[in-house]
Image 1 (spheres, rainbow, N blue to C red):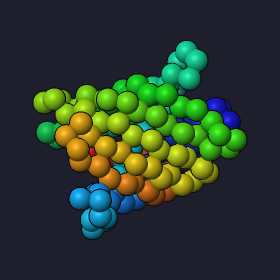
Image 2 (cartoon, helix red, strand yellow):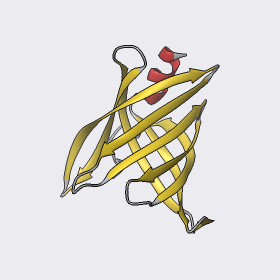
Image 3 (cartoon, rainbow, N blue to C red):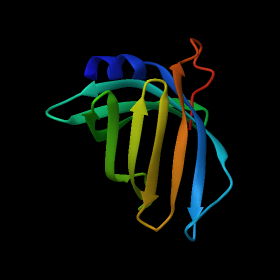
Amino acid sequence: MEDQFMERMREADLTGTWIPLQGGALGSGKPDTYRVVRATRKEGDRWEIVWRVTQRGQALELPLPCVVTFAGDVAVLILDEFGMGEGRRYSARVMFHGKIYTGHWWGAGGESGLIQGTVAPGAADGSRDGS
């Protein structure tokens, strides 16, 4: 399962929707795209997922330290209190099954939402880099 997950996440585009939760109600869905460069297992259930983002016209590769566990053939990504600058910290639980992902994220400030979408091999020219 680990090898399959690493292969699926190599130069992969995650394309889907994020839906904010506002006052306990679902908001309107918005398009959401990420480019994963690679997923690497570290020690135990610790992993590093490297994302490619474009900021100020420059493509950057950013490491995301997380835990990945497996429930049968489902990879579960666990992110706790990841810093995103300016005091913003986020946590998430995201399940990956085949070419589908779905999950819940929340921030230290009380914001939260749902994400869902598909995992596909990335465009060779990098034209779909997420941010």
